[in-house]
Image (cartoon, rainbow, N blue to C red):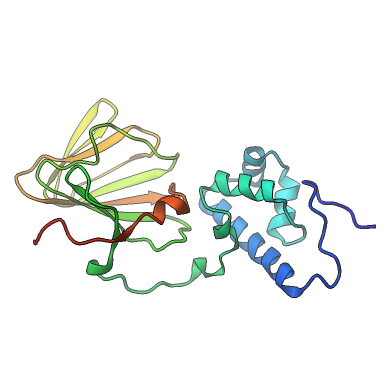
Length: 221
């Protein structure tokens, strides 16, 4: 008689096929990589998903399977989609990304945000923002996850708000802060501004990244 795993998922029967066994191995490798990238211990992830450290350890070693409910909880805790837990291509080199091919969001509030990191994300995510004169990330301060973020001014003069504090940064200046700190960026210079955001570990879910599409520049440089 087969014994069920801790979360109620029974081990695969003999002859279930190599595909299922391979998927289980991929899940284990991806789960461990994502957990370590987010600096979570086995106990941290177990507490976030209502399981145990021993169960997470078995999953990472490919010794057991997981129910759909457990997979959803793990994906949510890691900030990814369930599909990303099974993606083998996550560690592949995606090659060169041309400036003209950068995926971006539609311009909003005089700002266009472009994604430089190719999904699926692992250790960090990187964006570039182009601001019209007076453009900003929005009228309100915002937060996202609990990671470290660095903003680097590539061109122009940008005011970065962190809570009640205001910091004026010029070309070449940078600032680092927690993504859980309410923040906002605005171009206060007399010309177009450009910044880069580096976030580690990633805070964006796959659904958010999928919104980035090829868009035309705001205006000719």
